[in-house]
View 1 (cartoon, one colour):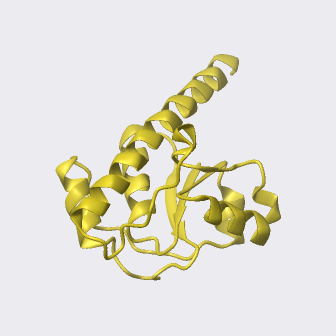
View 2 (tube, rainbow, N blue to C red):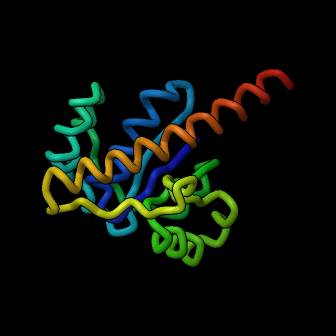
View 3 (cartoon, rainbow, N blue to C red):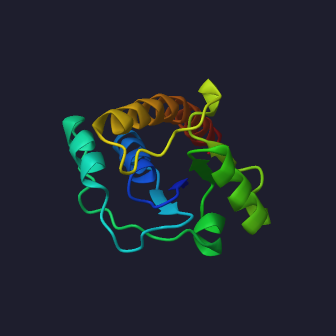
Length: 149
């Protein structure tokens, strides 16, 4: 299972969750926020942008990250270094399974909240690029596991 994490759980992590879910239908994908706007839907800009890519995140409901959610995830993808540090400090058992979604590009995904359409498109592009890398890795791992069993 994969957990995507951002701050409010209404912009970046729901977009990442949607992209990963679309490409990895047999893997459990979820999202949460370090300072979640609990109960809120995905930001309207995020919903609109995702629909343009054929992904509906309108049923998303923001939730706060916690120990149980983290312990259930095999992989946790965060948007920036600060979120990684926060999770590893708060939940030491996650060390070794927390990575930035855009790690391959060695970059953070900036928060587009209240920043307008261009900021959302930029964040989406980084998330999509990072998601492609992680999807390839996850598919290789699951293929190997299937060959073993």
